[in-house]
Length: 56
Image 1 (cartoon, rainbow, N blue to C red):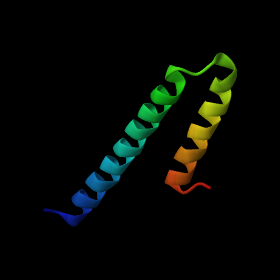
Image 2: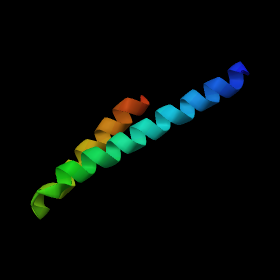
Image 3: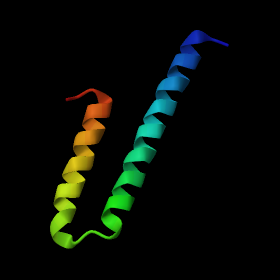
């Protein structure tokens, strides 16, 4: 296979894994949370996603 294609495929797969993980973390955390805690949970999930992407 073409190395460029494999590199692009791995990048796309990594992005998909991070997106799915963020969605699952958010759904799990918000499931039983009070409304006053939701903003903190969403901020924390956003920080984790930024850290995984290397923006922090």
